[in-house]
Structure formats: structure tokens, C-alpha cells
Length: 248
Image (cartoon, rainbow, N blue to C red; front, side, top):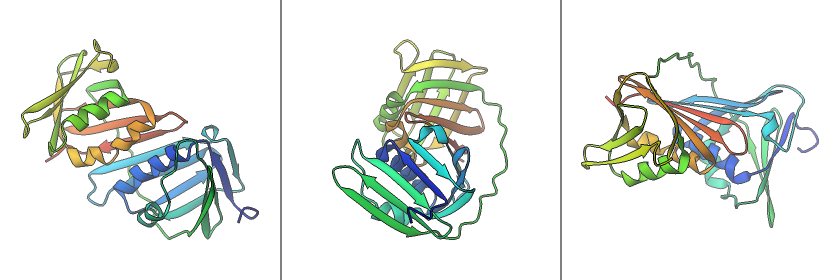
């Protein structure tokens, strides 16, 4: 397949790329990976229509990126993530695809090759969503991850911002809270157009929490009665946008 591919790329970090696919697999069992001259794009809505994930990886994020024509590859994520081994730090990933098949080559101490058949996946018809977020905070990814983990088992996480200095994550059922702040350095930038507070499902936040391990900074946006938006800037390049509806 290496000779008759339509798309072929080498990513510098197999671990980072697989972490993105794992987050996608936590949202949907099947997804359509779209390859163009500009890079890779994936957009998927979870079956309950509660969460939307939008992945954009530009071609300059790759060591090499070769494309002979635009291609969409249908991936059975449930099967893929069961069969692909977890890459080690330093492993490289080489991906190639034709109209019918796609292949992962993991290069580390040993070289491992995995070939799959592309499946039919309907393109997600997701309308553009224009939201007037009242709170925007750029945070250190690790600080956000630690805050969510400290409130494990909360069921509901309340995001609360009353000024541009502090962002609180509160767990009413546990009578506990975690605080991110500009003073402590966990928040790099913050803007509060108006004080806001909203509740979101902890399980759905945990579905993408692994992305904090491959990003240095996360942008958190929300407002009263509107969705939560988490933007992950991937270290090796690319962005993952995650939109989560408020908990009823």
C-alpha cells in the first residue's frame, strides 16, 4: 500500500496522535477523517447530541505530508483503539491510505504495522454555532487536569467566574471546589464580560481530559445557560475544539 497510497504522512509523535484519536473514540465509535491539501479535519457529534468535537491538524504539523487527492477515510474507532498498542514516548507514526484501506506503522524499538478497511461513515451535518461567550480563560493544561481530577466523582461540575482573577470548578454533591487563578499562575489570561456560572456533566469533560497531556494550554469559554467550549492547542501542532451542552 505504501506505493499506491492517496494520502501518506509521518507524525513526529505517535503518542500525541493516538491521544487525539482516543479522545475522538470517547465521543463516537465511528468517524470520518478528511484529508485535504491543508491537512486533516474531523468533526463529530456524540449520539446523545450533547458534545461536539472538532479536530484540525494542519499539514505543517507533520514531518511529511503527501496527498494525491482529497480523501475521506471511515474509521471504526472502537476496533482501532482495541487493536493498536499504546505508543511509547519517542515512537513515530506513519499513516497511509487508499480509497479502500488505511494503515498505521508505528516505529520505535520495533516496527509494527496495522492495516484496516475503510468503512462507510455518514458525514456529520453539524451547523455552525455562533455563541457569545461571557468568560474566556487561558489556563495551564496540567492545572485544569489536576482540578478536574481533584473533584473526581462529582457527577456535575459547576464552572463559576465572577471576576477576571479566579475560575472556580465546584462539585456541589461533594461539597468541594478547586480554584484556578491568575495570581497562582494557573490562568495565563482571563476576560469576564459578565459574571457567569453553569453546570456541566463531569463524565463528558473526562472524555477529553487526556488531551491535556499533549497540550500546554487550554482555552476555556462558557457563560450562563450556554455550552462549555474547551480549546486544546496540541504541542506538535493542531487544535481540538470541544463543545459541551449545559447539564439539564
